[in-house]
Image (cartoon, rainbow, N blue to C red; front, top):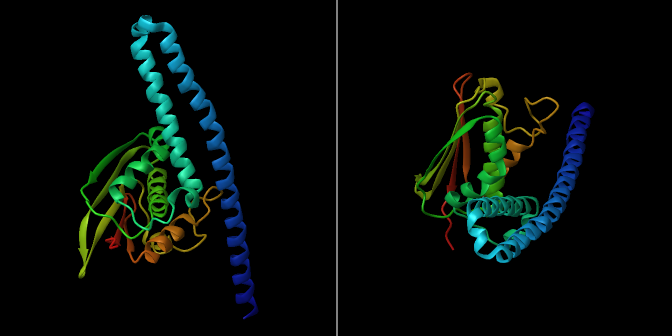
Amino acid sequence: ELSEANRRLEAATKQLVMSEKLAAIGEITAGVAHEINNPIAVIQGNLEVLRNALGEKARESETEFRLIDEQTERMRLIVSKLLQFAKPDEYSGSQEYSAPSEVFSDCLPLVRHLMKKNEIDVERNQQSTGTVGMGRTELQQVLVNLIVNAVHAMPEGGILSLACENSIHGDAHGIAITVRDTGTGMSPEVASRIFDPFYTTKRGTGTGLGLSITHMLVTNAGGSIAVETAPGKGTAFRIWLPEYSA
């Protein structure tokens, strides 16, 4: 009994330390995002001043101006999504529902650099038309966790498939979400433990909390999550969430 009590105490201590660490990361991320917003605004403002100053001559560099516009807007979008992710309470309000097809689009700018680095191709099949009973930031966290895991499972490149469609589970209407990769896959032993807190196969880099938090958020919203995987066959996470009703 004493040994079991010590084990539980150690687990609780680790969870507390990790929670504090994640909170600190959130604060740092929000601070950095705010700092990046300022030079982005300066670039956009001065670009418009430069256009006006050049007058008709600006047409000679129209392509270059357009590219700068597009890239600064891309930076602004990424910073905006980072702020939403790091400070959900400040940006989500009291909204307790979201549209999965829209949230997928929110997530991709946050992980695009990882996909580009690992040479990941993305296939999207977003047919769902309704909303689910999970807040936008919570669903974003779930999807980012699954997408990052999928990218890490494909170090040599591969295909990331994202899908969401209207689905009936029993007598309940909802939306089925699938995040599938063509990566290394998992053995049955590993797959049976992936939702356990602090369990990780990423020694030295993983916290072991991503999938346990994902599982908690999905079940708290009245949904379910399952995994299909096999070594060398890739992995598919399937989520079902009930339709939101006001």
